[in-house]
Image 1: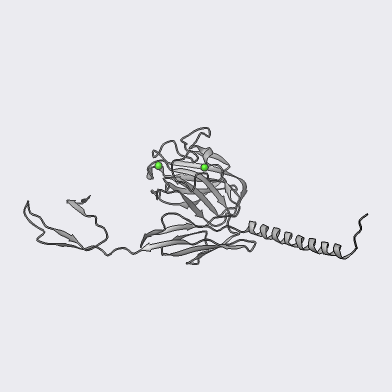
Image 2: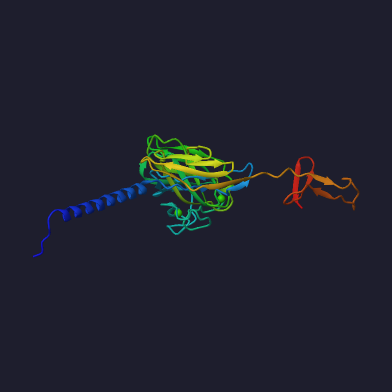
Length: 309
Ligand SMILES: [Ca+2]
Ligand SMILES: [Ca+2]
């Protein structure tokens, strides 16, 4: 029978096992902390290079209690039927078109492209207060002009967003609507669209609602503390998100470039500007990188026509 000397080997084994256990605990704990930390990523709402006077929306992700559409309570129309594409089923759940842009079956579309106003009344599970709505517009955005949340105490829809509908860039976007945290649980919202103001079908991939007050946002440059900003000046923009666990992460930078507008062009003529039929005058522009001439034809008293040359 084989025997072991007592004591030391067992102590060594115990010490080794203790170290292994400690590291196992630490790595597991670190993994758990990492899993809880938010992920910061900035989504530009359009081109990040533009001329002075332009702007781009930069949006950070919203984390807290995100809820997606679970049912469609009412709607004006839909292009498809019975979950066959471009119908109200296509609104349910997390986005499955965004960030792609185009005429996809996985997004809702109205029956007609531009004939009448459209609306959607959408249901969400797990009623709770919200302070934002994200609408994923993935084809011909810009038609949404009013958004409401339903107050279950009064059964009335309260307005949280109004805008004048107009065509936006031909790219998918998240219409981020933020407002003070509701004093009531929200399980229904209503989206109203001026479809005729934005030619073609105006398609919505998904809608999210939630409460992001448990997360702190800090943008640089600027110092804003909102989930999204409207950048009008150039710079390397980052957002730092801190959650209620104390986890803090900073996004990769998004570079916004603002180009100066060119000088106002001047035109010089090489001769008289009034001459008989058959004559001519040469007009010369001040130097520039590119040129586009226009001729304005004026009709009395108020009509002006502008023609490309
Ligand atoms: Ca339309
Ligand atoms: Ca969808």
